[in-house]
Image 1 (cartoon, chains in turn red, green):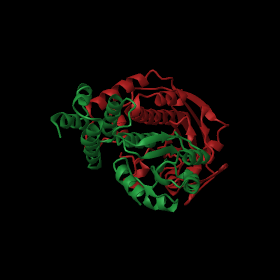
Image 2 (cartoon, each protein chain N blue to C red; image 1 turned 120 degrees about the horizontal axis):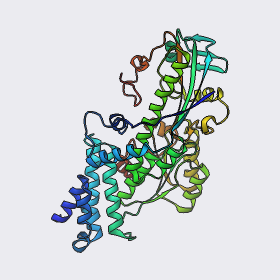
Image 3 (spheres, rainbow over the protein chains, first blue to last red; image 1 turned 45 degrees about the horizontal axis):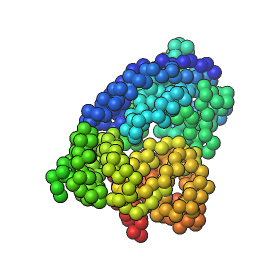
Image 4 (cartoon, one colour; image 1 turned 135 degrees about the horizontal axis):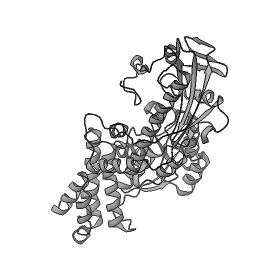
Length: 217
Length: 206
C-alpha cells in the first residue's frame, strides 16, 4: 500500500451547487450562495486528505466480473471496462476526521447541508488526484473509478476492497453490517490500469438515467 | 388575516431573514401565539413545501425557511407549549447508519408544525428505539436510513417498537419506497420532507 497526502484545493462552485441539487430549474438564494462561498474558503484551512492505493494483477475477466487473488469483483460493467487492463488499482481517499468534526459543528441544517456538499466535492477531487498519481506510477492509462454500491457492483464489494489493505488504512474503518466507512466523507474505489485504459464514462451504457451519481461527460 | 401576519408569512416564504427578525417583536403585541402559528407559520410552511414539491425551490431554500421558522418559534414561544399540536414523535437513524441529514430535516419539519420531537440521533440501536418508545409512549416513531444494508435492523426495530409500545412507525431514506416500507412492516413512508406531514396525518388517522 502506498500512502499519499492529497491537496485540498478550492472546491469548484458549480460542482458544490450541483451536489446541493441545483440544476436548470432553480437558482440558489443569495444567502445560500454566500454560505457556499464562505464554507468553501474555510475548507482550504482543513488538513490535507489522506489517500492510499495498491496495484494488483488481474487473474481473469469473465462476463460476470473480474477475478482477483483476494476474490471476485461481481460487476459486468466493470468487467467490460477492464478488458485490456493489466492491473486493478484499489484506492481510498478520505476527507479525514477533521472534516467530520467540521461537518458535525456546522451552523444549522443549511450549514450541514453545504458542508456535506463541499465534502463530496473535496473527496471526488482527491480521487482525481490519486488517479493521476496511479497513472504516473504505472506509466499508462487509468479508467474512471468504480465504487462498491454504485452501478452494478453491490456494496458488499467493500469487503474485497478493504481486504487488499491493512486494517484501518489511512484511518478509515468499515462499520460492521452496514459496510459504511468512517470518517463519513471517504471514498473507496477500483480503477482499471493499462495502456489501453482511458477515463471513459461507463454511465453512458447504464440504464439508470435518473441515478443521482450519473456522470454526464 | 391581519396585514402583519400576512407580511410575516410572506417573509418566511421569501426567506427574508432581516424582515422576519424585524417583525418578530411586533407579533405578540397584536396576536396570540395560536394566531401566529395557525395563520402565519403553518401556512408559510405549507407554501414552502408546495414550492419545494413543484421544484421551484431546492433543499437549501427549504432549509432556510425551516431555519427561519425555528428561529421564530424560539423567539415567540420561549418555552410555552401554546400553538403546538399535541403530537409526540420519536426520531432516529437506525444502527449501522450515520447519515443523519434527512432525519434532521424531518426533525425541523415536525418542529415547524408544532410536534414535540424526541431525537435519538444516528446509529441508534434497536433496543434504544424500543426503550424510549416504551417509556415515552409517542404517537409515532420515525426511522431513517440511507443504507440498504440496514434493512434487517429496520425490520427488527419496527416489529419490536410496535410490539412493545404500540406506536405507529414511519420510515424514510434514500433506498426506501412504499413497497419496501410495506415489506418491513412500517405503517407509513414519506418520500421527502414535502409529503411528510400529510403522510403522518394519514398514518395517525388510520
